[in-house]
Image (cartoon, rainbow, N blue to C red; front, side, top):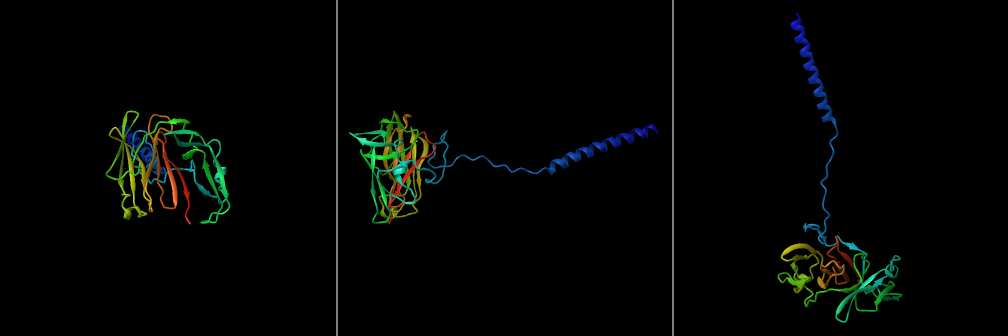
Length: 264
């Protein structure tokens, strides 16, 4: 009789353990499932990757409002250029065969009504031969080491090679051929420009998909932020009624854009 009692007690203990395990499993299954989102790297075709990671995105994913041009700006909705530029801005100018960065030296000329738009305008008139004005913290004053070049347009199939601080660089283009009128007038044509250093791909510095009788032209190569690496300035308007400059700094995660519209 005691034998059967022990067997009954043992069976009861086993059933209790199984029920407890099943309850824990059911509780685990009843917990709400959490969505997981993979962390994404910042995307920008003009981004300077930390370990030469290749990013891909439209060229317009860049920083606006840090560049002004020695040009005429329309005044509308209280958007006065004279309220933007001030003594903290710098300029890049060309003088006596070399480039210099110094505090912006200019004056503003006003016009009550532009014939084309009917809007009042303000014109930034520089004292020197200024390429751009900018308000970028990493740019430093002083003489600028620069690279001379003859052809501002880098056509696909004709890379531009240069040496800077004993390193060999190459700018290589693909896409639209600006010397062909039928491509230059295509508003949906694409132009991509990649930078190589000592034979190794560094970054894509231009990836533009909008051209309307315009072209991307190299305006400057030199060390603007004094880090020993070349920086670039391009003229790259998307339409023939736009003036647009792009600054690409080697040490910056993004490029800087400044543009002026003069469409009628």
